Image (cartoon, rainbow, N blue to C red; front, side):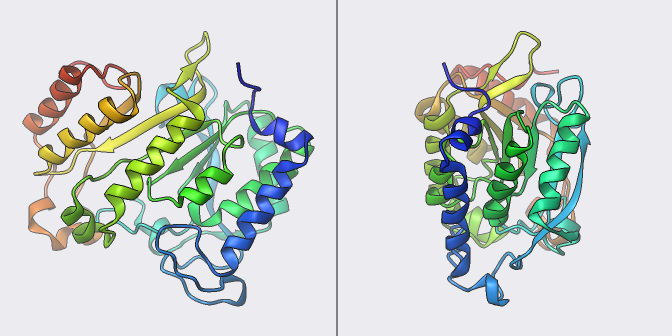
Length: 305
């Protein structure tokens, strides 16, 4: 059995504040993501994600549009962070992740927001695109936990993470919710300018699963702990989708919750690439669902409509 939520044990033994300090140190010559910019965000040096020293938040609210296990009955306390290190050409949150729209706030104010979301009855705190602000977020968790924060932390990310950062989150994050976008290096380079994404993401998912295991839910069906993987089917990339599903079933677990998503849209810079300038077909979606079932995966997606 694990202590619930996991960060409370680290609060009581003083380790939570130590983790925040370690992450802040990684930001000074920033190595918080695999881009390894090695530039000092504290003195205003520019990094690929365009995040600065201060925390920038786009919005925070009770979100009902996530997976049912995450939103439950009272919503997920979702905090959308500005900027992103992966910068996908097809990003559906372009104004937030690429343009960096949002409000600069203090860590103290974020801690207050986390308490407000808990007081609304939200089932969890859900940090969206959190990697580049991980020092501020762990700091805010610490400050909020001192005031009584006691709901699970969801790390909702692109999967493009530093293994060192994820290890520092061990015992802080209860629910990991990464994307697994590509296992094809050419596609990763072409659409995200990150040819290392496949190897990075595989190692990250293995580590996340080591920490929290398959998704666990309570008797109401609400997630308490574990790994939930999202995969967005891309037009013309069914072969890569199948490779992703094979990786999850063989190297993670057939008990992994996998949300196989069909909502790809050609937006923003995706229109520059003719091969992905369309929605996926019904046949592509059916092919993905049927292959997942064939592999023995069974959680997070329905039967073919």
